[in-house]
Length: 230
Image (cartoon, rainbow, N blue to C red; front, side, top):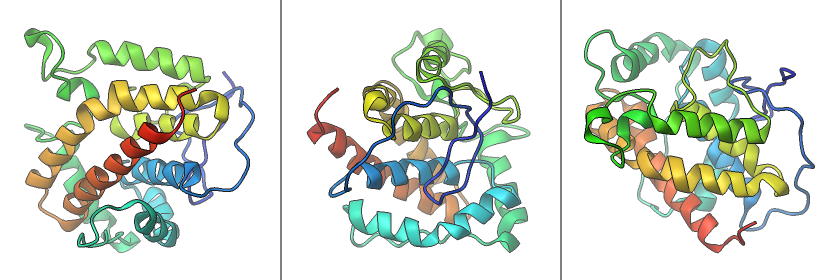
């Protein structure tokens, strides 16, 4: 497939997945809507990515978008706004990311769907490369996406699933695939990951991100509940 990076809510490009060909994009005003949900999903894809300097730079650029999106979809008016780290925070943030999600040693919060799924045989629970990995590859293929070899990640990494969902939401004809990604995948495991991160995080950013994600996921679920199925 032709390599072509996907865009995020801040107007930059991530390149974790490579879409081709692109269907007709959505048009029209965003009232309750699709554009806000797309921005929310895309921002989450960024925040859950490895916090290298270039990535954190996009977070800084998207601070106003995050605040505006939060106002539109948050159901928790008492929740503290997430503090988006600056570039000076990258070393500490990377250390926390490695401890929570990568290792070495025991990893408290693997960011992979396969690890958190409970609707699988007991002997493959808490393992990687489960049945959902193959299912996700099929979904990505249907969307014309492929996981970039440069990402170094599995197809069921949280950031990759979220980015694929944001892409699918961006076009009328692929919104049913976004609904499938959410209902059959993200909604099945993301809350468990977020609760684990909220418990295990030592710094504010990932603890706050876990809470924000749970809040926004509830809004996304509500969006799909009222949006007509394709």
